[in-house]
Image 1 (cartoon, rainbow, N blue to C red):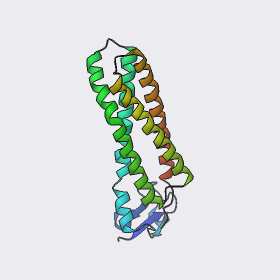
Image 2 (cartoon, rainbow, N blue to C red):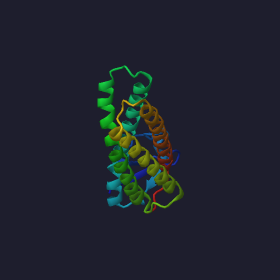
Image 3 (cartoon, rainbow, N blue to C red):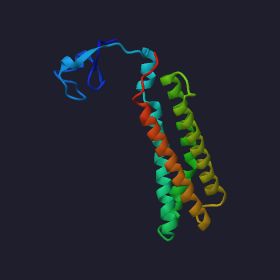
Image 4 (cartoon, rainbow, N blue to C red):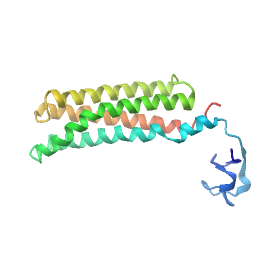
Amino acid sequence: MAELLRCKSCGYVVEAGKVGEVCPACGVPRKMMEAWKDPVSDRRRLILGLDIHPVILHFSVSFCASAFVLALVALVLPGFYPDQVAGILTPLLVVLPLAVLVSFLSGLLDGKVRFRRTRTPVLSRKKLLGGAFFVLSIAAATLALAVGPYVPWVRIVDVVVLAVGVLCAGTLARLGKGLLHSAFPG
């Protein structure tokens, strides 16, 4: 493993050979950097470096946000290309539960690799919100398949369910962002 340096000012970690005269993150002089030993094993670092959960998570958030916008268009402008809107909205709603489930499972893997457990208070809250997001996505998909997107009350329910789904996704993202700065157990 290459020699690592950690900035005393901002905590940024970089390979010694890749740093110039200043910290690449905050710009303090190199003399403010100290030798640093990574407490995370190479295997765990490799898995975490793939960013599996953050990458997969973007699909479910994108599907939910896109479906919300389309459901809102279908509700507010029912005559605006109804067949095309329904033709896009229905497949999004059908795929959404799968995207949320894969995001949830990748989050469990990430928590297990990153923190070696998934029962911490923040991770437990994320699991609860992720489960709620999954249930909401199933409800939206079930409505789309069982009743169809053209029924007026379905449009209202879709907008509400997807709005709550977007709120769940935003809360999950905010909680996840807070975890980015946590120290890994060795």
